[in-house]
Amino acid sequence: MPSSKVRTLELNEQIPHITKYMGSKRNLIDFIVKSLNEVYTGKETIVDLFAGSSILSGALRNQAKVHSNDIQSYSAVLANLYLSNYDWISYNGISEHVVDKATIIYENYKKNNNLRFDYSKINSIDALTKIEAKQRNLYKKDFTHQDYHLFTKYYSGTYWNYDQCLWIDSIRKVADDYKNTNLYFVILASLMFAMTYNSQSTGHYAQYRDATSDSSMKDILIYRQREFLPYFKRKFADLKVALNENKYAFRTTTLDYSECLDEINPNSIVYADPPYCFVHYSRFYHALETLVLYDYPEVKHKGRYRTDRHQSPFCIKTKVEGAFVNLFQKIKTKESSLVLSYSNTGMIDLESLKNLLKKQMGKEYEFETKVLLYKHSTMGRKEDKSRNVQEAALIAKKV
Ligand SMILES: C[S@@+](CC[C@H](N)C(=O)[O-])C[C@H]1O[C@@H](n2cnc3c(N)ncnc32)[C@H](O)[C@@H]1O
Image (tube, rainbow, N blue to C red; front, side, top):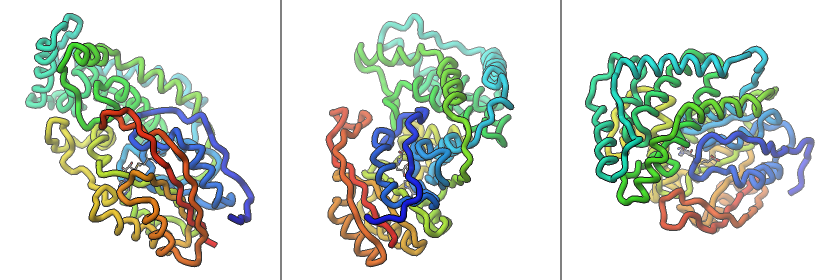
């Protein structure tokens, strides 16, 4: 593609890891940045329309204007984390201070509740099942004496144990003390990291595991005996090292993609990475959404999902084509370019998607497709751990 290039995007490879995310482009970020460079000239805003784990914001921090969007609120927390400008000198001793505050809250909660669930002597499936069920019953208990009690009440004995939930609530309370500063994002992201690596589920929150064999019992016990706070501290320390100056303007939104496209600057570059398959992200990551919203939602089913979960048209067979048509038309109206990620295992086959793109965008655009062979993680949803797929970047450049 001919281009009037002034500047090329570089890949920032030091993107701190926060949470395992289905369909994350972390391992493909080089391919994505190269694809963006086909259209980027140095002045456009890059719109990450379906930002998810916001890895692209991490890759582009301090080198381009970014507008990060996703319908899920945790994604905006991560984008704000990666894109904020940090002056750590003015926050001297902050991580110790945050940990001390959280520890005092945790000790108080623990003392007042006077509950104990001791895993150290659990050595049978039956004993494990019983201690977990007791904690899940806390859902019926009145916790109004504990000002931040959402996770203690809703999730003890599910993805986390009671003690880990007490930590989640304690740290979440401290985060609110910093609500109007960028430390809020650092605290919440470090908390999400600790939640990810203390959860006994397989990297998402669609289901927690039951002990059905000696080996699953032993594995669950590893997570149940894990200490929560060291994970939080470690991530906080990592973030202080990895994130410093960002002198570029940025924006984060939590809009439906269609509304977001109404709001973007004309002549932007839209990077679109919509869901590829029928599983809704809101079911897999409801616990992260609830952590951020902290709104004591109505929950249902064994996995205790929020009942107001978002249903994406990109995950529904009868709606996906219309959703793409809308996406293409709105980008055209905004005279913007598009880099679209999709795979050959998606809801629409790649050839049909390419044809649809060309038909909608028409003569004012130049088209190119880049393809990469890639091993996709199934994140425990299939019998095999990973599958070979073709990962494509469909590029439509405004001429
Ligand atoms: C494939 S993932 C994006 C992964 C991301 N690029 C990354 O590297 O982490 C798709 C994302 O689209 C979001 N999403 C689904 N439907 C949406 C909609 N209608 N509007 C905005 N975001 C949506 C989901 O919440 C999910 O985070």
